[in-house]
Length: 341
Image (cartoon, rainbow, N blue to C red; front, side):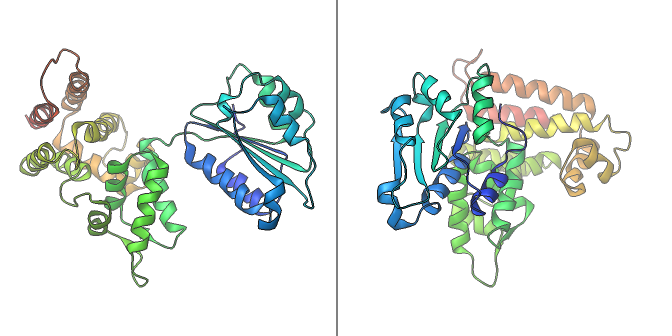
């Protein structure tokens, strides 16, 4: 696997400082970081006038490993470097020629291998060690749902904008872990912000992304935490009538994660303290533990356990197991009724 020290920020820092390596092997299930690194190399290593003769884009399904090596062994023309970007590198067959080249790469060639939708077979350890010895082996992993709010907050901060926790969670829930789509939506939000007020609010999210500030997964979770039965049923009814606004598949993981953490909260030695509870649950701030303090007042540990069991049952039914024809809307209502009763 990729070395732990090789992070996106570390790779970009070296690139910006023009500390180039002869090989960048970019792999993983998250294409966003692979594209960011390869696009930066394509746009910044060479001057525009140098690119015609010294920058080549190849596709793994169209070339052999030997052809890539032949291209990499060429010398640059009137330039310090030549850049070769191989897209769809996961489709290259018979990589023996590449492995031999990686052991002694051309110092004037910057070879970028873009291996998406997977990684190098973990059994090919010598191959990975060879890559690490001469260049950069970077693995771009999918972000977990719990990490999305931090990503959104950081993305906006680097662009001189801020966001409140509610808006952050609404965006994360509605868009999910597709970072390319997520950043595209965030860029749209950023363009809408006036110069004097670079703050993203629920109203901005509703106007620019189209997610209701009153009827969304975050608000449903809040209603469940506070046992607001009327509001929870309002939101479920809205989801049933507007499937694009929210669905069982969107809020079920969010509620499951909440009740799972709630169950863990009961084992915290100082569960009445938000600070202690936040540390126990490994939350980002004591503020995030507030919902669990409220939840322990509204739900017993046994009830939380039964709710988790019910959620697993509903999840199975939503996938057709022991459920030939109950629609998702009815399953949503069944789950919410069980939580409150």
